Amino acid sequence: YKSTLQSCCSKVICKGCRRANKLRGMNKNLNHACLMCRQPTPRSEKDVNMYSMKRVAANDSVAIQERGKKHYYDGHYRGAFKYWRKAAELGDVDAHHD
Image (cartoon, rainbow, N blue to C red; front, side, top):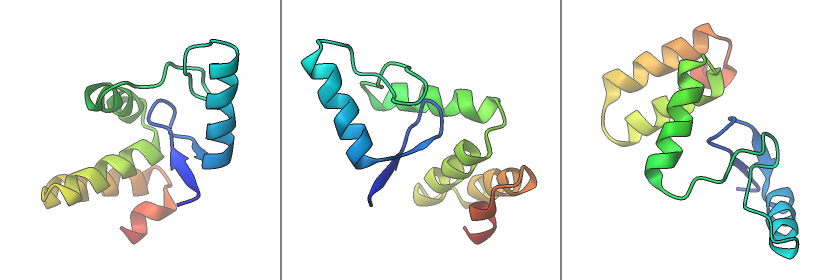
């Protein structure tokens, strides 16, 4: 993939921009932060889940659709369907496909 989804704000950022932001932070001794929302970069899977669930609680259709994918890949098909349905109701086109 040429882009990545930020768990903190559910924005898609190209990997080149993400890399440039990371290098800028390293060159200026800054803490790693999201290019879009400036939240600190998650250091663990627990942090990623925490950010993701905050976005789900805020009714972010992209985060809800991604949560559905996670449930699907983990074998929780009913949970995946629940999240995809909610994302579709909120207008996420990709949720209709998944």
